[in-house]
Image 1 (spheres, one colour):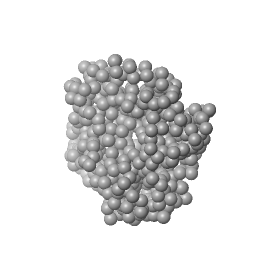
Image 2 (cartoon, each protein chain N blue to C red):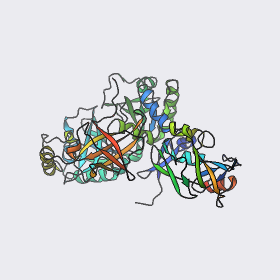
Image 3 (tube, each protein chain N blue to C red):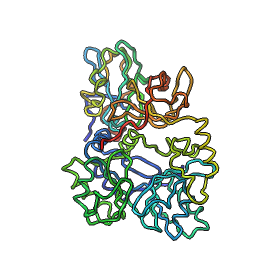
Image 4 (cartoon, rainbow over the protein chains, first blue to last red):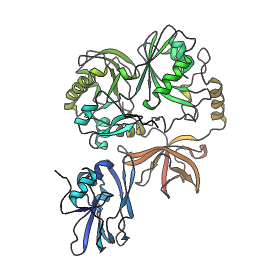
Length: 126
Length: 372
């Protein structure tokens, strides 16, 4: 049984992207990625108004053992960041697909390279 | 590095059944964490944690001249250790460089157990064997016939007392006595690497699982949890304890590392590294090289080993260990910095965190000291 929600799409850098609502989609990291990182202690997210580009770094996540770049799975303008995660980065571990979302993007261009839930499950072995 | 398959401890299957995230550590497949490493860290600080440390090297030295051999081979005065007691010491190369830091237990008048870091166990066995030439003593690598479990934290004495008749109240810090725990023959030592009270239990690998289960059951009401190497690292960092490969290396002498007190020049006989260490001691006293300090972040980004410490735009040192401190709630680090910038409270010190200079406070070590 897959832990990866069917309605999301996934990057090979282990980010997820929600379906856009009124042109705005939500980005987070997968449970597989959160487990691999360990306890996230600091999230440096892109700023509201910043333009992010699919496949490029837009922030970083610090865990006890390491720091990892955050890649945007989609191109567009950041409309909102999850202040709850900035204040309590452990949300990324406890609810990576829900309360631990990272930022929202006004989608400029539909990404082509993303995986379906089943494809990501096979890719990550999660 | 060698491409041989990782070594597994006697508790390997048990770790996997507990859902541990495993990691390669010095050629061993070891539990990194079972769940949240911060929860494991907090459990050890406030309750108790159970560790598998069977990757550590155990080397037995026996014979009429066991003490003389160790006095020659190590920098400490091992002949002065009373049976039943342990000593923190180091083994150095002839040039004074640290080959490993060790805990040495004197089990009997003519028998010692040397506990080495997993990454250096082979080096230590080889050096002791070579240095044993001419002494009436035998060096034996017992790493494969000894499993090591540690129960650490303020609840550790109460948990262990349920499982043994041994006199734990009489067992002092850095002492070890043979006994029986949960029906298993064990060397019970009051040592650890967490900054908390606790015990290390050396047992036969065949008994390790039985002992682990008994400690788990006895500790459950007190909140004992299994703990991995990730929290062991943050626990020792908060306690200001050095880790070989980070704060200690062959390119540093004990004096360079601020641990010159382990070198005993007044012991009888010559010892490997004496001349070089004597020079190093003078140098450290007159013209101190870099000094090991603590750094506490003002921000939230975490310094990592190898990052530069800077002041006035110049590199003045290097991070040796860094992590988010669960107890302080801030990133902390140990670093070697130029002596001029090493005093606690020195202003203007920053760490280059991937190109950005983040301000840090210089503090005295340790970051955390338990209330006794």
